[in-house]
Length: 70
Image (tube, rainbow, N blue to C red; front, side, top):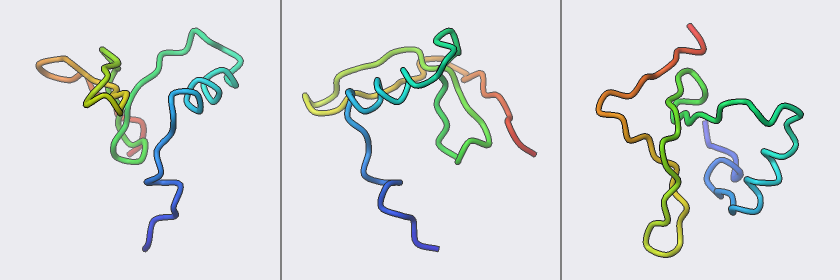
């Protein structure tokens, strides 16, 4: 299966903020998943990398992953 273009285009900081503001509950914890939402880890930091990326980082020695499926 070929991934649709939106899966690799990325988002700007402004786009991410706009999307997060659309949630009615702003007290929700934001987590990061790299497996399609099956698991997620907490975001520890937001770092500027190489002057062109805002990177969401998990800084735990052993990430506290949550299973969402399966």
